[in-house]
Amino acid sequence: MQRFVVALLAAVDAAIAAAVGLALILAPATLLWVFGFGTDADWSALWAATASVWQLGHLVPLDITLPPIYLTAAGIDEAAASFSLSLAPLALAALAAGLAARTGVRASRSEAWESGLIGGIVAFTALAAGVALTGANPLAAAPPGLAIVLPALVFAIPATLAAVVTEWREADVGLIARGRDALESRIGESGLAAVSETTRGVGIVVTGFVGAGAVLLTVALIARGPQVVALSQAGNADVLGASVIALSQLAYLPTLVVWAASFIAGPGFAVGAATTVAPAGTQVGVLPPVPLLGVIPESTTSWLLLLALVPVALGALAGWMVRSRLIADHPRAIADGWGLRATVAGAIAALSGGAAALLAQLAGGSIGPGALAQVGPSPAAVGLAVGVEVLIGAAILLALPSGRGSGNDADVDGWRVWQPEPSDEPRPLTGDATADTSRVHDTAPVDGTADRDDAGRVEPADDPDRTDTQPLFPHPRRGEGSPLD
Image 1 (cartoon, rainbow, N blue to C red):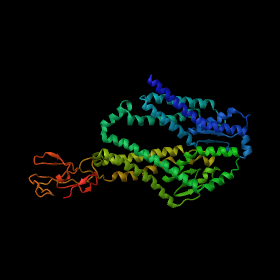
Image 2: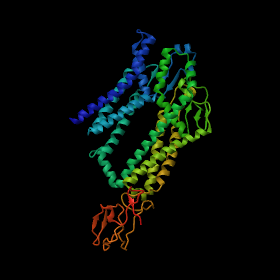
Image 3: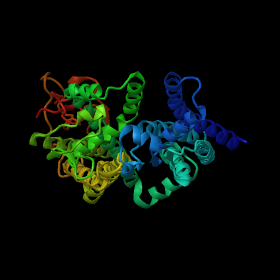
Image 4: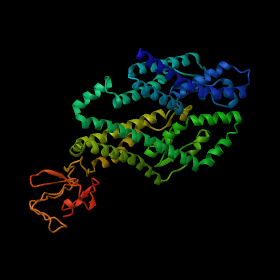
């Protein structure tokens, strides 16, 4: 019964995820429909338009066919009447992926993650099929198979990843827990920790990569705000048209963030065939009259090549955090395992490059006929650049020797923590000249908590005067004292 309840709740979550995306499109579209076309408009076309936008936002390409009456009114050549629209507004896909990840985490913590995933994925797939069947649009046709499969994957992949990661980190029983334990028995506890920390390092790099793109886009919007405003005014759009353009640009902001991140990595992006926008140089032709494209500079300076240091710094940050945690928990493995260090650095770089390539693939596509069929970054170039840059930063930090042990004075990477040598000669007590000198006091232990009598018994050293040497300066590694000879 519990598995059925978990599956039912996950199905409700999936239905909410699909409904939220549709509502975000349908609500403003309804207002625009009323004020733009009046109450006598064809309301069935409103749902068809909403379904097409929802499908495009979930990575489904649309085959656009412009009617002849529109071609005549707009003066468009008949050769441009049909084209593919595949550049997705990633805001909708990101929203669905975030809600799907939430569903996966909740399914894992309900102790029946398989049932939760099945219920959620089946429900979202059924809703995607319903949208595809009821929202047929002759002006923007979507391939029937892709209209169902791609939205289902947008939900299924994040939900599955979130559930598996949560099971890996928190579960004590179950399929993933057994697989984790089997892997630990093969590669050891330190190897399993390296796998977990590698995943953490990849998360740091990908998050920082997207964040750096958002920062660069914000700076570009501020610096080139006048150009954006000029393009908006040049369109001479009325209130209805300006509202549609503004909402569309908001939906495409995450797509432009990935473009900006690709610019930071070095390869940049294209806004048409035979065009390039990169730190090494910019070559663009006539841009579409979209105000947000005003952030694209006409030329660049070679100083912008220094932006490539951002992925290097992210790799260094990931390497430092992974190295610190491994040294704290498994100092011997990280000290002796140069192969482990190289493997961790290579895995972080490879997975980060793969994630960057996937983001570039999602942020590219077609927005029109002819040259506009090639828009966005190149996945292969972006993935390779990010992988190499992250590898440099991660390798530098992981190759540094560690200078600390794990609670003992062992050698770690050739660095020895100082420890006093025991003295064979008795030392007279300081202070009272009449004190009993028959007791032999060895050098005080590093922790300063005990000394030994003639029989070797350990006695507490609560009284500072009972030892011949006292901590004078804080120990640089342990926060304790070092004796003064």
